Image 1 (cartoon, one colour):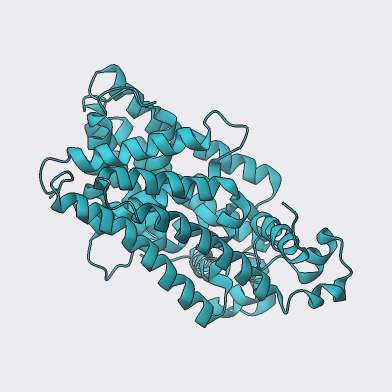
Image 2 (cartoon, helix red, strand yellow; image 1 turned 60 degrees about the vertical axis):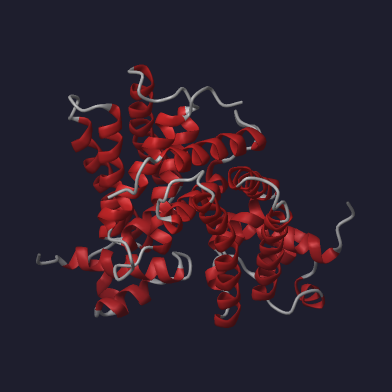
Length: 196
Length: 196
């Protein structure tokens, strides 16, 4: 794929934000690594925060699109939908670790209104997972555990993959996704009664 | 408990690092919020990195001590030891969210040798969890899943609590810990065969 200049800037900035953190990265650093003269970067972006915002929006869209594609399969059982949502999430995380990691950890540096938009998008995304778990509870396959807590456990475990996954490591993204899906589906199916 | 000046500095700095990130916090910020004149802070600490190091060491010690106390109970089943380790971890995380969060997210800003020490300590800690899972697999209670991946899923889920736990929220630390422990123990017990 031919990257536009703008995509290239997001990609370079994403890697820098991930390495050093947003606060410790300057517009000059981004320009230098992109091979752009300092001032000319402003022909492409209005500010450092705009670069962060672009990265965060791109990642949020990929997570959203991946989950939406699964939600359409209303013919599937809740367990199968949860499995596919976990697989889709792991694919987005491992496909671009830099962008996913910046989305997950650096969004706090956005301005108030943008931060609020990110929180709203994350809530919507989290509700999709929770919905599938609650569907599974209604249809009898899943135990009546606290769906909100399980949703958080699943998403935190999936997002944590950002911190340790290596493309040259022992497990492929597909293997990791399948293991995690099995683990959480069995966890949901097996709990025999309400926990204390 | 009466805090020493040094403990107070760690506590104030921990909160600032958590809010703004390490890179965006200055020694002057720490001094100001501690009510200390800028230069006099250096009577207590050698550098900003030393404050981070002190916080990280303190948190690492609390996690280590909590897990060590459980490991001594060799009379317990693997499931009961795992439950207690999860409970101990959640207690450390929720007891001081600021320090735990800085330990988990800001340690990357330490110098190379200190970062290596943190990584070694985290490996040791992770091995304790993995060991309990492998013990459970040998004694027959746990299925033969990939112990390394399950360990990561558990620890990432437990560490993620830092990001959403609120002291005034719906669930107490004990309730969260009990839910998570049940979830993962059932997940481990239920998987009937090796995943694909």
